[in-house]
Image: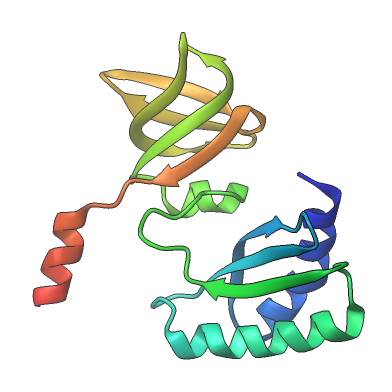
Length: 160
């Protein structure tokens, strides 16, 4: 994790939590004097456009006062989406039982990528059921992990 990203998380996470949201992820692409700072927020029941607007206004004011970013940048606030990244250890607890896809930093069982059911987390290791076998992966070896949405579930919820 880059130093600027860590500093931004340390600065912004308490502000987002004080508003009643979880900062699930932060992307900071701040090169070349004009960048993008993207926050992903969540709460039980999901995120609305009004939620994003409220967080954006509050975070923008804090960033104006603290001024941690040199140069120009755009601030975006969004929900993590149906195919959200699993970033924090607690995310692997919350979404146990769901389908995920993972890209590894180093080979695991001869693979760089896997798709399967997240069985859960035990300290710094997650267990994934894929193709009739259970694979254990250290959190530090995960480059990126995302939920695989069950689109049928979303479609049924939208018609109910």
